Image (cartoon, rainbow, N blue to C red; front, side, top):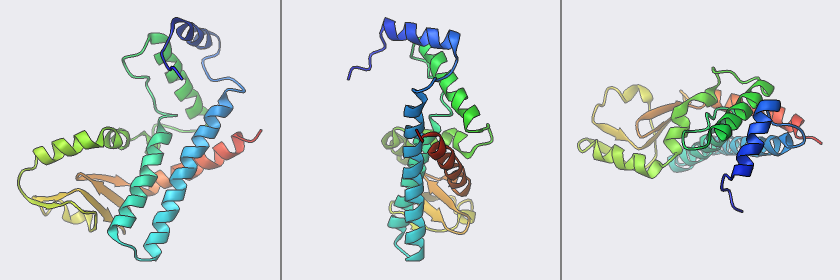
Length: 203
């Protein structure tokens, strides 16, 4: 399918912006099901993490399941926190903003939501390039290329330790490229959104 933004699409977006300012029925069902899908994928990965935790699985399994859960939560966040970017026609940007704000209102999502954290989206977008910079700017120290279980309280004390991926089980914190992500609130928000989307997606 061609996703080129044509003059006709721009005109349709303009009419929706001027007359409605949000996604109308039945088109909103496509969004509800998409939101439900991302939320369900995230929760499945969180459940996998809990299973691995009980089985005392390897750090690789624990971290990979969490990274998968957070990655799907990141995809979910775009439905509610999207400013449209800068490289699109004004009408399309306004349409995206209206859609995002409309769903935030429907799902009772505020700026306090754990999903708003831009670091989540930024970290997983072009991760390979971030890894490039991370390694280029840290030429000295002790590197841990494999996922490991540790304590975030030790990070500041070991200035030259470079944590590629580290999990603090007690603090419920995943560290990626020395960035800390506390995932308990993320999971709670995903659960809440999942329940709402499940109800709204019923025809």
